[in-house]
Length: 130
Image 1 (spheres, rainbow, N blue to C red):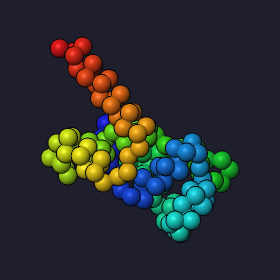
Image 2: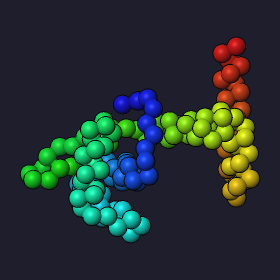
Image 3: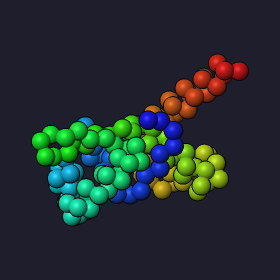
């Protein structure tokens, strides 16, 4: 599934568990979330059912247990949510967003080098299109 996917905080936390583990039961998701977010089994089960209805996850049944798998790719969700953030918070101004990120976080030399490399690659890509 591709397109726009903007997940709420709990949905995103559940998706991270599924992306990392590739598949999980309700109990496994609950246990993974528990250190930072203690939730009832029914809360996690209900959220997974809603996420399945929305097309974010699917499940297979193993005996009496549902095993959930993500249908959304991590990269697609990241891209969609960042694009939404740029549009809503920075009115589409990517430069302003990058300034905020660079000013608000400690950035290492390696990270800056990676960013420069990405910018050079994007510049080349744009030149090749023209």
